Image 1: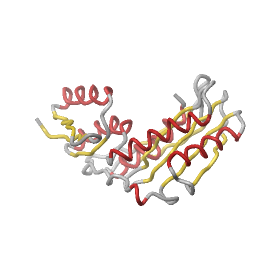
Image 2: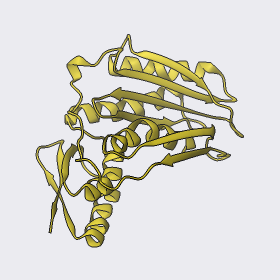
Image 3: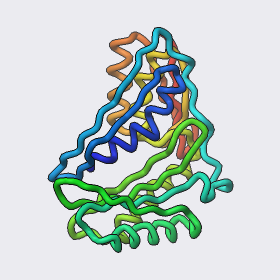
Length: 222
């Protein structure tokens, strides 16, 4: 997986929620990298707090209100032509029916060549981030199709948190002592993570299916 995904994920998805809970933080990047050469280097500075604020997540994105103010497509390229990123973004905009979505190409200085497509949706509390990394032998259009498919599945669920972030929020919710959010079908990693946290903290994490596409994750003390 591309190293820059972790950096952008922490900066725009995870850390804003942590900051809202009272933990001031900052992230600095010195270099980004792509698999297999890697080479990404970044640092997170966290100022601890004695008491976390209540755990809160913003509402699910309203599909009818998505526009150029809260959506963005970014193509990352390192040692590759810009045309790859442009093809990805144009194909993704077409697949999502977002003809006027904001698009940007980011040129990455990294030890090896690489490319990825990121699609972002800004919410009240954080950024929903979806990424597919370019692969040798896979067309830009197929990369865009896969990334757009993840976005559409998330929006169809009408949930608050995509499943990658859901996995990371469990610890914060446990430390806060209470909280809940909705997400698409949890991954096996999320289910395992919940069991481990429950054994350590003795706080029960409830995972319940509410409808065909949405699950609610909540926490109560045991």
